[in-house]
Length: 209
Image (cartoon, rainbow, N blue to C red):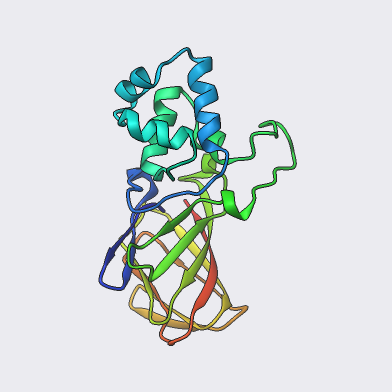
């Protein structure tokens, strides 16, 4: 599970291991100050962090001051440069990694979306689960699609419809699902989730590798 790119009104999903999230952004209110705090703790100037992360000094300054919402690709570069995991920035900073109860606000939930706004995926699973088991909230506009290339061998997907009606196509089969229905299917072949209606639809998608 990973990037969402677009072609017309179709939202394409690639394998998360490619780590290419350029079309998406997150909107956490505290990421900027946390980046600044870690940078200062590492005794790095803006210029030095810009150099090692390959991100412009002006953009870094805007991110730290909360004037810009970084893409996940930008955050990936920053966390690599600072020696952090992405979840260190996304998750609530007031809670320890050992805390058995973690609260993530809606505002802090990373969201991948198509540039034309036809479909979106909210990442509900922790970032450290990427590539193993991931779960997402999918939201489609009317007639929206989520079309995917094969993921890593053995990947299985479990789609539960929350609202609207969705059609899953995999291995030459088409399955129509209503709210409350679950479709389980291989994710290591070409597959597509389609909202055939004019009204929005939503679902929870679990991807297991």
